[in-house]
Each structure stands twice: as C-alpha cells, then as structure tokens.
Image (tube, rainbow, N blue to C red; front, side):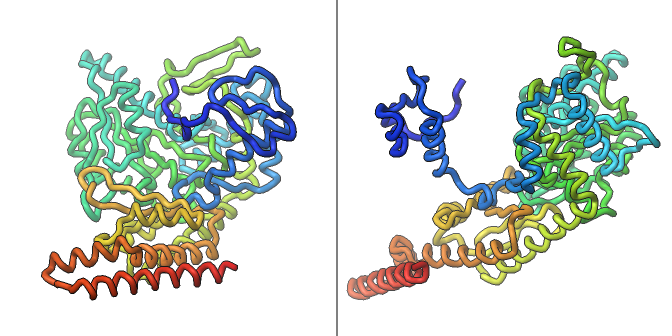
Length: 493
C-alpha cells in the first residue's frame, strides 16, 4: 500500500537533460521501463531529482546523525552487503553487536557481575526497540495475571502526552491502552506524581522520557521511581519503568553523570537508546537493554537453525544491513568515554551560543531548558503580525530547515520553533542562523500585506487615517522593502 502522494501528477514521464546523451525517449514515472538504459543515465536522472532535497547538514529538525568520519564511512560501505541476521555466516559482526550491547548496558549501570553478559539487542531504531520493550512488559504482566487467576485482557501503559508517536503505535498495534498525563503551559514533560496516580493493577509499566522530542527536557525518573516504589508497597503490585532514552541516553552519562535515571534505580527494567542520534551513527540503528535476563520473557525469543546454526532472535525485523552495527562499534572504540564527552560538551556550548543569540534579538521566548538534549525550543514574543510557521517557511529560503509545531494536549495553544544541535552544527553556523532569523523577521515585518494588516488594526483601535496618509505609508514601506532587497543582493554579489 502506497501512503504517500506523488510530488507531480501532471506528467507520467521523467525527462532528463543530461540523459539525452544516452537515451532519446523519456522514462515512465510509475511503471518499470520496457528497456534498460546506460548506468550513467540512470545515475544522472536520480541525482538530478535528489538535488531538490534539503541539505542534511542544515536540517535542524532532525536528531539523526548526518556526519561521520571518512574511515567509518569506508567501513560501512565495505560491510553494506552483509545481512545482520546471518549470525553463523558473519560471526564477527554478531560479536561486534554483542560488544556494543555490553558497552551500552554498562554505560547505563546495569547490575552485571564480572564476566556476566548483558541482555539486549540491536534494532533498526528506537521505535523497534520500544516495541520490543513494551512487548516484554506486556507478556510479563500477562503471565503474572494468569498465574494469579486474574483478567489479563486490558493492559495499559502510562506516559506523558509528550511521548514520541512510536509509543502510540505500540499501544495501537499491540492493543495496549495508552494513558497520557496531559501537559500544561510552562511544564512540557510528564508530571511523575500525576503519572503514579494513573497507575492501576492493569498498568504494565510507566514510560519515562530522557530527552523530550518537544523541548529536550529530561523527565524526573528518580522521583518517578521513588513514588512508584511507595505505591507498589501499598498495593502489592510490581509496576516497573521503561526509560525511553532515544535522545538522551548518549548524553546524560557524559554531561550529567550524577543524574540518576538508569539501572541505578531499582524499578528501571529496560532502556532504549538511538545509536543514530547522539550515538553518532547514520540512520538505522537503535538499542534496547534489559536490567536482567528475567526481565525478558523466554517465550518472546525465537530460535532458528536454517541459516547454519541455532540462533536466538528477538526482533520485529529480520533481515537488515550490518553497516550501522559496525559503525556503532567504531564510534564506541574510536571516541571512548573521553571522546563522547567532548562531543556532547561541544554540542552544549553551541546550544548556549544559539540560545543567547536568540535572546539578544528580544523577539523570542526560550521554552527549552539549559540542561537536557542540546537543542533550543522557542516561540515568538509577538505573533500578532506573523506566526512561527511563517518564520519557519521563510527561513527555508536561506537553506535552513527549522520545524514549527504546536504542543500536545493540554498546551495546544503554544507554538514553538526548535533547533537541534548536532555534532556537525558549529558555532559559526549558530551565529549565522541567528543573523538569518533577524533577516527573516525584518522581511516579514515589512511585507506589504503586513502593512495593510497593521493599518486595519489601527482602524479597529480607533485610529483613523486619511486616504493620502494611507497611500504614503504603503509607498514608504514598499520603498524600504525594495531597498533592503537591493542591499542584500549587492552584498551577495
């Protein structure tokens, strides 16, 4: 089933200027062509279309890594033809995955003894990791309810309304009720007290977010753990916690080592993290680790032998490339603890440069906190003339991709812009982005349509102008607007 719409439905053929050197006929757009074409033509046709994509380095909407060292790029290309699931055929790749799982589990303070192996698996991303963790909680809860002779057909999970859409997918796909703690203006993460109040005998776990997608803020997992410990004592339940550390899992250990959010807290049973975010690997790798082997029910693990040997597997996907696993291992041994800390420190410093630059414009309210994922979420102080969506759209003329969005319930009236600071976003780019924001705001302020709107507001406020005054004001704004355009054009030339 194709869910996406085509960019153009006016022409059923693909035309290429350069391809005419090799082929004279246009290619069908939605059908396989009858004949082959030269490899040079195929490359050029696709390359021409891809030029219209945004620049990944200027895509400030995404948390996903867009730059890696050439040596790692080379390793990835050399292993791109290896199927990750063929463990018997590619035992070294499997070994590298196991090393990554153990390194990450220990980074998250899993209670492992000397020589004890961690329990976890590599996934396509945090979405798959969350599905696996959620299934483990659901099956554990069902098994306990069955043993107690109690109903087990109405499981629920408690989260904040700020969770990523993959949690909604898990709830819908695997028939679990999603109980969301609503947000409020000025507080855009899950309130631990309200979350624990919503826990009942059918709750399979509470999901806490270490690095909210909306504002980058870390939820208070320590307080959630302490409150849940007390409730479990009072009720006799055994409700656990899953930490969605997709964004923050590779940040907190290096920037905030004293922060207790991981397996140091007894009720944290599983943690997921995105290797392709601040794990510094290209898109396509996530990780989920469990506190102990008993937290992952055996019946969820499948054993296959038709690839050459007995292979345990617990994934939603089967075949997938090995490149990202190998790249993750490269980053872990190449950077080490010191290297990751340096990268995260640098990201945070550049975040502060951007934050301070935006504050100096006096046009924005900063919504995000200084501690958390290195990003800046902010809103306009005055949105009467233009809103955040118009700012984001106009900013694209400079190449920047900055998202604007509304907050979830009950803070839908709040709209923000958000800039994610990744390793490849330098201080120079941060300063340039602030300057471009100022240009965009100036242009939006002086657009003729805004002038008419301002004059209409003046009439509504009882300020009357003559026809001559109105003409002069519109002419004046147009003149300033054109002069500004010409000045900017001369600077570029």
